[in-house]
Image 1 (cartoon, rainbow, N blue to C red):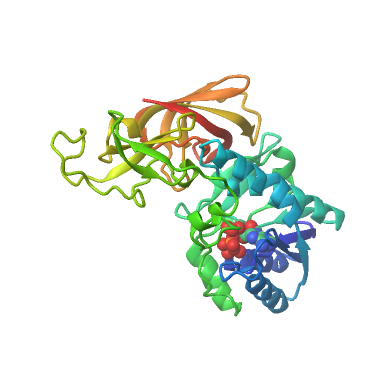
Image 2: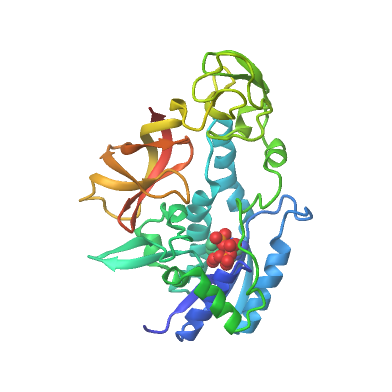
Length: 367
Ligand SMILES: Nc1ncnc2c1ncn2[C@@H]1O[C@H](COP(=O)(O)OP(=O)(O)OP(=O)(O)O)[C@@H](O)[C@H]1O
């Protein structure tokens, strides 16, 4: 491959460190950039940004590359966090990491890298890109257990053409082995979890600071009030913990349950501010055979793709076989098997084998 100037998003984690190392080894001119996307509570015990930058700088030092610190916190607030709050307010459960990739990592960051004279950017995501018949396809990461294509499905051709994912060709165990072999200071750093700006902090307490919330009734499927919720935004479909209602002892408890059977969040009615719960993991209200998604975004031209495909309605789910029915503003999916807790606001992402085609935001689901 010809020598290129490549800007790597260095997060302080192992995957991006190995990404930078591999590209440098291939003879490219590599520059690291650390992004700061959140600064509302720099002093909080949950904000690891300062530590992460120190780790990223130590990595750059060992690999022998320059590192720059850039601040996209204002962009992040405008383009990701504002939408995140709007979605919660509307009773949906958004996926800010999907939007962060489309708007920050592969837009603000990409533009910045291009201004620095880069030909490509690279990140430590577990996904792959491949040229195919004049297009660049987004593929699942080779390591099934780490595949992150779900979060990248809103990238378009222009973004994919400028992007490399070197660790997507490897298993996580190999990435860790490389990190240890070359003596990276963060070789044993644990993988980050959770939404980037929220980190490991208590979610409810965090949302509380930004969203007006109105307590209201929790009702069962027959409309009987069985408890109080603290604000619809704090609950997600399929949620079982934290409802404060426990099992039920009364006779004639709703189907699928019985005494002490756990309750699950099944519906949110924003108009009446009511949270509906059902008993039993397999209750029909929790199962959907079809969905409609809007706000579509495709990684490549969809010319030949209608008919049978695979879809994920949440990250880390196996692909569910479905019929794809495209429309001008939205698409429908009809599943071969009922899907559990299909959640408005989450992404429905379509796959043709290992190729990630793109997807949309789930607007509604039907039994
Ligand atoms: N603060 C950041 N600055 C620069 N790049 C980042 C930052 N956070 C994430 N990235 C890029 O996005 C990729 C995927 O992000 P993700 O949150 O999955 O990674 P991580 O677990 O924090 O770190 P890593 O992937 O490096 O182990 C990273 O590999 C890195 O290239």
